[in-house]
Length: 307
Image (cartoon, rainbow, N blue to C red; front, side, top):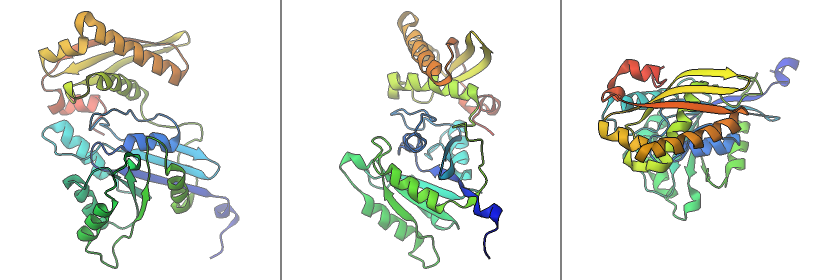
């Protein structure tokens, strides 16, 4: 059937789920794809705790990326919520982007994703990330895919691409493939926004990122940030929030000697947020101990980790 004038004018528009195990570089890749920092990035695995929508609108069309938490072995409620959010993200999307770490051999979580996606209908692209690191385990991942799917004729035959979200290598080629695969349709979001992630959660994530960059594995997942009030006055934004830790000893780590680390993090976050929102931002932060915050459903809901 020949396209009508209305359908002929439509441009590619797709919802793209970006999935994979923890610490394969999904957030770095999404930021590279949209050309702006939307998701926080740190060397700590499982940094992304909620589903983040990053929106790329250009003359070719619109791609909406769902940056999801990395699947990992969960031992507590927050981890289980993150895994459930990641696995549910592949439902109802146009394209699934499975991100693998090409610099490391396949792990159990990688094989789990391969097995799951190999049985699902729809379009799947396999992205071998971190291709700039010099080691390449692409063939091991291809073997893992063939073994998991049984090389069935009716199974998904994914496109395989090598990229580096860090350097941008292969990103333009990946975008070409995505726009070519996206179905025609109206834009899913207005063309002047890059994310629909709630502003309070963005601010909380920026604060967490500053701590992760300093503390790394010393306080990997015991820290949560809740932004309670946001006063967007013309003279500048005033933000009040609470940093939750699980032990009294962790409170001292977050504060630092004489509160110096908290001050350092606050200043770094204020600077970045002012650049993002083009307004002066002042943070007022308090540190509290709540040993069960990661197991408390209502706390997780208030933090935005439960939808």
